[in-house]
Length: 136
Length: 136
Image 1 (cartoon, rainbow over the protein chains, first blue to last red):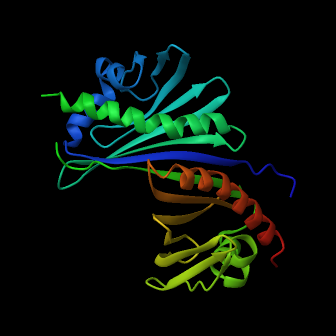
Image 2 (cartoon, rainbow over the protein chains, first blue to last red):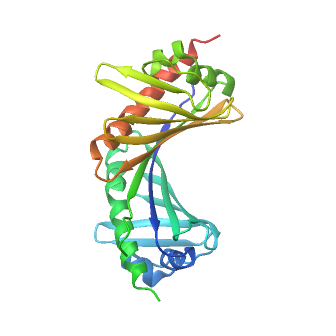
Image 3 (cartoon, each protein chain N blue to C red):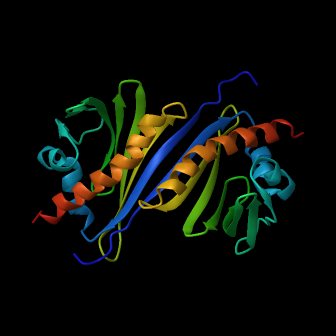
């Protein structure tokens, strides 16, 4: 056994929201709304398009991987030495939408990134909920 | 918005192993092998069957949820005030098997459980790899 068997970890955050998938989709894909809950950005919901998320502490280099309107969205999320993928899944429920975010690609050595994501994503979900609650 | 919108987190660990799914499946489902990499147990791979994982620090109360031989296995994993579900997925690859474990159900308040699982599962994967490497 000489091969490298790298272990990767993912952070998953899930929450049920009392809004239809279409409404959450707007907050996940419209740049001015993304800016309100996540970071400043030049996002375009088209597979293959690169975009940047920027914050005080630096920036995240992203590229859209998949776009399934109102259902799923994924993009790579690279910053410094982190190479990760963020995947959003929206599933309709009786009361609204079950929203799931998975960020995968943390090596076991990347503890501080993993820890930061574990703490940060629930806060982004809070902010996302605030943004969506104000949409018509 | 009066409903409780609880956020849950999951820990996911993934690793490619140079063994076929059948071999990993044995280590995931045979009690004497599970004891070598995880904990002492009375596991039976039958949906609906309860079992217990026991360690120095206490025990985990489990119940098998799904069993798809060589492909997927899930069981609930309850300990103290944690109510979680562990799901194993085995996907064949050219070189062996991609093994994925997701433990879901950590509330945002259950930080120490989440942190413990984040650190503990990669170690269990290491031990699992050692066990499987010795199988015929």
